[in-house]
Image 1 (cartoon, rainbow, N blue to C red):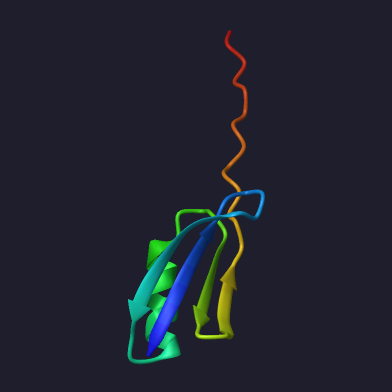
Image 2 (cartoon, rainbow, N blue to C red):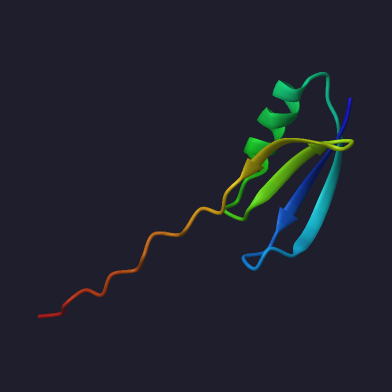
Length: 67
């Protein structure tokens, strides 16, 4: 089956798309999960959304007090 993995920027604009051919939704989802780098993504097959991946916020940097 053919799939498209869309990668979005933080404001929701499409920044890239990867075309995939996988045997099942589960295989395509596994591939998409492995490609995650914290940006929001959406996995589609033709006109059917398979899964949406939310953005992962980075750990906040905490200031250290120097003594």
